[in-house]
Amino acid sequence: MKKLNRRAGLVAALVAVPLALTACSGGGSDEAASGDGSLTIWHYESDASAMGQAWAKAIEIFKAEHPGVEVKVENQTFEAIQKNAKIVLTGNDVPDVMEYNKGNATAGQLASQGLLTSLTEDAEELGWGDKLASSLQTTARYDERGLMGGGEWYGVPNYGEYVSVFYNKDMFAEHGLEVPTTLAELESVMDTFVEAGITPLAEAGAEYPLGQLWYNLVLANADRQFVNDYQLFQNDVDFHGPAMQAGTEKLDAWIKAGYVADDVAGLTAEDMGTAFISGKYPMMVSGSWWFGRLVEEIQYDWGQFLFPGNSLHTGSSGNLWVVPENAKNKDLAVDFIDITLRPEVQNILGEKGGLPVAGDPAAISDPKTQEFTKAFADINATDGLAFYPDWPVAGYYDQIVSALQSLANQSKSPTEVLDQLRAPYVEGKADLLEG
Image (tube, rainbow, N blue to C red; front, side, top):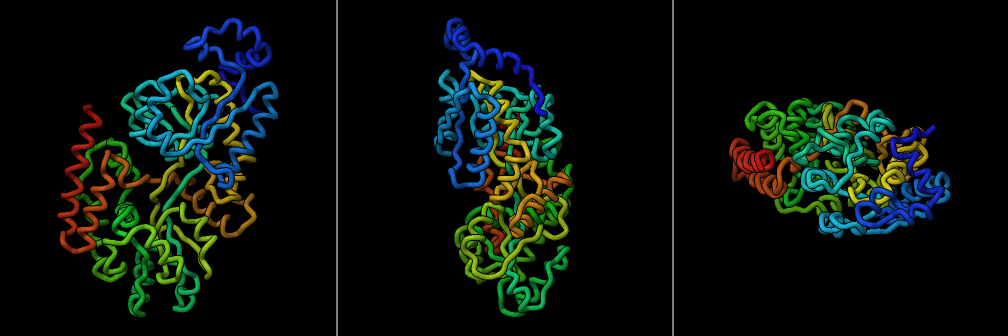
């Protein structure tokens, strides 16, 4: 049975006697405090997407449980919310609950500016912390500076994403290869393909993919404390320590061994994906956002496995549900958020390939989607999400792409690449911590 939160008694009264409330409401902050018996939702998921279908189920449940409440759904674009959120949320014409991007520069910034409602008491009362792995909670909580990982709850994720290895089962079978379970076995598999004249990995150095491969190799030599230091600034990061140096040297060795294409530095993510889909490469290391397209377009037998030997994986929660500080119906917003975490909603996410954060993979009927979802559940079961390499400081994405292109072109050594990455990280960290 759903627990009542601290504002629920007030909400029940609001729904029961709307005329009396209207008479007492004076607008502005008073109106924001009183509510108007409706729920306005902003999100940017299409109706056909896994998230869109899950939110539709959540709205159906909400309406059944709140028969006196009018639900208004307004579809926005990601770009519009990303660009205008601060301006919109300073006014009184705001949604009660909205989908918003996670991270220091987005949800964290709005939280630090007092534009989002703290959901800490609701999270504790409704048990959200019990439903979400610690690494998923990282993007939901922000301190007074807007840095993720600690402090108050300002958002709730409902779905996730992760990087794994997609592989061509037909090519593996043709060369008598098994799915590798260790990094050494993966290298043995790649050596077999190289000896056959086949480049093993579909990759792209002009955009994010090569950086994610590099981060996975760094994580192969890292532990949770390294992730907390690198992403959450708990301690200084040694860019020539065991994790960074070994991971970068390993990528350098893979480039020299011909595990990626000679022209990888100039290839885009789209180049990588279409080449893998066409059957040119036997493996592609990339994110779960490719899953739906691979299902639709690949004509051969394919599968996926987690990066062999790693206990930490590139990935994170998806976007967040947040409640603006000036929202009129915060209790109803909290009720809606709580519904989105229920099994009947989470299982729709899973069935449609949306990676639920609190679903049951066994409830999914399609074997490939079940395998895809179970891998994410396995990562969460061991608290294995390590976020993305470009998250720590603003502008770091471009720095990583540039540095790794130099490695791919063999114009810089691993040590020189790490020196190049260290400087903007240290500067950006100081800006965030010292203001």
